Image (cartoon, rainbow, N blue to C red; front, side):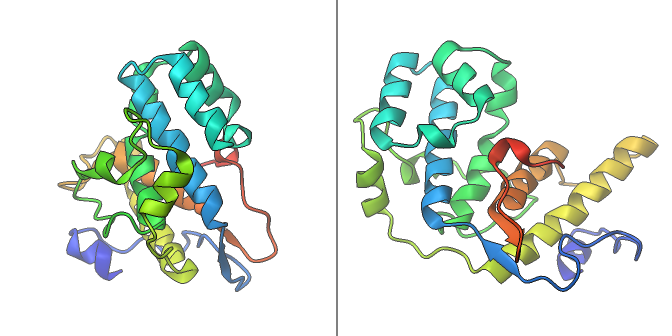
Length: 206
């Protein structure tokens, strides 16, 4: 509520469901899964800027992360299928995953992805291997409770954006609905309720 208030956004109604019901504890997926997701989204961004598909697929093969690719990502990376703008917008999802593994220090919804993010990710020009990159960044993973709180915050922000779209009202000043949506996507993917299996990247429904 403090985070919403700082943005000049009123508290959501009491009827708004919470991300976790029945008092289930939040659980965070394995770090290696989050590192693989960051690596894949980094390659997606490189393909947006015309990294050759054979080099992109070779890097992913060497990284042993092909099992983490969604069919749509495979089509875009290997064949260039899909709208480039759609994948370019996933930069904010990549930023959120980078926050999850401690590479960036904030997820302020009023600030877009930091310009120095590429320096923290695998250098595909060298190319830097997946294992070399993992050894270069030995940052602590966020605590599951902290991630759950951030998810709740972005869940509320996404609800506010949805209500504004439905009513034709302007969004709160400084809030970008695409940024909110893509960061929430990553947070929904990363954390799950105790007793439930984590969702695959393309299973997340917002």
